[in-house]
Amino acid sequence: MSAVSVTRLLVGWFLRAACGLAMVLPLVATVVGADHQQTEAVSEFYAARGHAPAWSDDALYDDLVAAIQELADHGLVPDHYHLQALLENRGNRDVREYLATTAWFSAAAHLVHGKLDPATYEPDWTARGRKQDLAAHLTTALSDGSVAGSLDALAPRHPEYRALKAELALLRARPEESPIVVSDGPLLANGAAGERVEQLQARLAQLGVLPVAAQNGVFDEITEDAVETFQMKSGLAVDGMVGPATLGGLRQDVQSKIEQVIVNMERWRWLPDDLGPRHVRVNLADFSVSTYYRGRLERTHSVIIGRPYRKTPVFTSYISHVVLNPWWETPESIARKDKLPLFQQDPASADRLGYQILVGSRVVPAASIDWAALSEDNFPYRIRQAPGPHNALGRIKFMFPNKHDVYLHDTPNRGLFSQHQPMFSSGCIRVQDPLELAAWLFQDTPGWDAERFQEVIADGKELQVNLKRAVPIHVLYFTAEVDGARRYLPDVYGRDGAVLEGLLRQGG
Image (cartoon, rainbow, N blue to C red; front, side, top):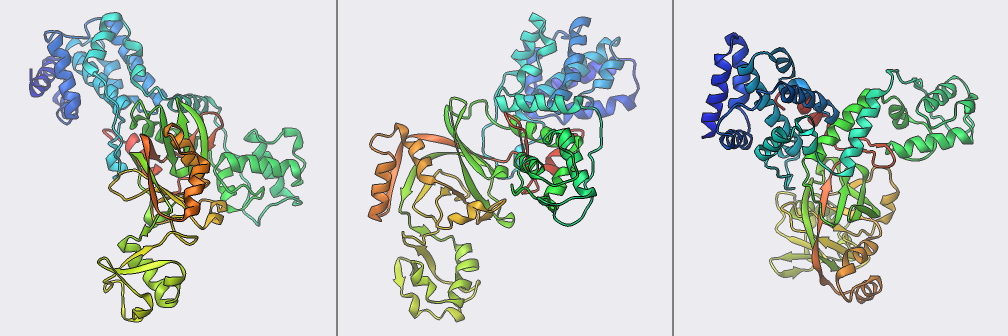
């Protein structure tokens, strides 16, 4: 039976029911506009059962309704899956067949693949999604009576997803209370006293980071420690002082945290079940790169990411090799927009910083160029930078094929790692302590350890070193992490709002 035939079959069941056309039309549109794979799954499901109705058993139908209600536990909206119509039409067998089937397959698809198309919200998305035979899954659930848990069983099994799910339940169980507001005013720091300090201490106690007994109206060391704890958990600069950024974080209420968790649960639904037994994860929102082995976190490094107008993309690839003492082939856009103005202002900087100016493969002496006569639209040169202490890539770069020409690399400007929210790159990811990351990657590659890397770097010559086995790398964007410590991070690239809006919208 074709997908179109299944659509007609389901609509036919519905049309035979005793209900008005006004109720039919929006539900018909739901099926006709359904994802092609989902519609094919419905077709396979009914073909396997000889097109016999699936929801004649009242107990199984009630289990389905319960499963739809529990979609809220996954941050989804049960009413997007015919919940009210399912409750109202329990006694109408034709109508409920249509409703139950479309609701289950729609919910199942959203738990497996995500409600939203990741490429719509992350245009550079390349990670392969999860796979699941939905028709077979539902057939098994109906036969063994496990319909009630059939949808939850399709959700990601990543511990991080389950931790977010548990956090969502905790947040929703909290009694509704407005955050105690710390009034606007000058910077609060150790030694301050007065009404605003009293408000601050009351809010910190409300958040559970300051003992109630420590509220004394004086910004003392205990209060400073509590502020630092709050800042660390919130992804803020940890300085123990309360300025505008920390004030904004203190005013975040439970509902905004719920929304943040829901958004990040959806992002986990976009990912494959297997990220790789050994893999690397970059969390752009956390300015970190971490290594994992068999699900266990082994290392974390700070990173510098792209500026807000040169955002680092979100994608998945495989680290295949590293380059020691790399030359930097300066991208054309950076050469025109960044390096040309530098050389016009200080022509000697081209040689001083190790840049070569080329026409094709021919090196042109920088001193022979009339830099003032050039412009962004009139720049016939190619620029590259030799290995050395000033090289923009530092001592090592980590290569993984991708259309964005983005990679991990060292940097000569290591002081930038101490900056809060370091967004200084042109899209690539600068990593702190890169040789330690390289040693971790090359554990299975004979002859390469930290000492060997240091020897080659001291030689000063460019060298490519291939990994024995490529290692998956996932460049991701998570603004809520609660696997262990609870951390609600600033949405530095402004991506959460669109995802939340899509999740709350009927149909995505």
